[in-house]
Image (tube, rainbow over all chains, first blue to last red; front, top):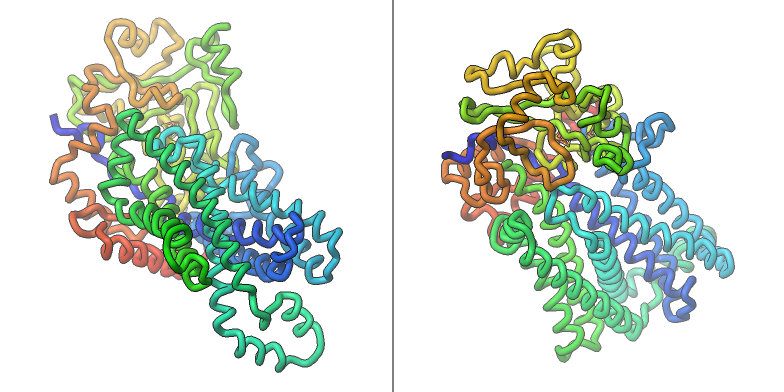
Length: 323
Length: 241
Ligand code: SF4
Ligand code: SF4
């Protein structure tokens, strides 16, 4: 009998590319923010110099997020319903996520302000708060898609962990690339800095260390930190793969989709660009101690993690579009 | 603890506890006899619906007689319920409608025709089914025809492993058809083509077309870019409703 008997309606992939981009931006933001916390919260002196600029990148990445999310709604002008008391729904992950997404930039801005003022104590206190909110906001992005029993690919307890580790490495990678580019354009940046009169803007640029060289040793060290994250990501992915391949029929066919079907391209990009090639560059290649090599690995990680967001979100929803 | 009680403890979200088998409560259900079915669409109304618990604005809720209902004025069109529903039983209403008083761009679903059932009529699908394959009624009432059908026939539900306690029962359902994975893997060339045409005709973001070459190393990124262009174009089309 033809299978179309009860499956003759086709469906869209409801959460599509824009939501993948949101997950990626959120991850980059959270990851960059954690790096900024290395200096001001965890007390690693070396990282202090880049603290403010890392947080600024994090805020910038986060500014795009609400635009994407709100425009993706069917009724964008109703977005504030999410926060109205009589509309609030305790059991919906998205209700809690909305609060987190609003809390995170606020905490981050206060933290950035105290870094700018060089107030170590307050920066420490708000640093802890904002790192916690960064982690939980990104954890939520994993959770919101994980709590759907119908989506076999995403319905796994390690989803949020995969998201967090992915966020950390892509955020670190993003910063490495920006620092490397800033080092290349050091002289023009210096000129821009010196062209300003003494005042708020100049003080701000100085606090961000724009026009100062980011030490090569720092970039290489960040590369090493990123490499540890990549190893964890690799283990988690392997774990997920094992669960899928020993899983139910639905999990297996989802896996087929990702490994060989419609999503093989982003999946392979993820495995090679986000994990295998960077690991090779960072541990085995002759350029592993050169900022140039680290920056290449970091750029690949950013692309690869975007691939992961794509196959993770689209792949989970795609299969059922036939059902 | 009886199963019904345990279920009501486990239930979360803006919903009445599952009423299947609870004395004094109604639980409307449907039995579809596939021996008579000629193959039109199908819907499932869960007794423990994931769409209700995941909706952030309480736009969708469960009535104590088992109807899962939608409040259009609350819905923001976030599509969480569509992602949560294991049956793809939900859809977003179109942006342009011939009748301008009808809601647009919000989620909708089958509501077991509550407007008819509460007036003593049968749901429209029951009355229009040419083969007379669908039976509708209160399963908690042992005298009703659905109860009799359920007692006397071997029935099956779709994807009951998803913890939804579906209330649309099938007679003569072939496991091979019901299984989403099998149906996906064995789909015919014709169905594949139809699917791709459907996708090509859509403007929505996120429709990846699975053809032979379109998901390759060039095709896939192009599709992603196309999706984003559509997403941005949509800013004008939505006109900020
Ligand atoms: S689309 Fe509407 S009904 Fe569905 S989860 Fe969002 S607000 Fe609720
Ligand atoms: S079948 Fe889907 S839309 Fe219907 S009640 Fe269950 S989860 Fe909700």
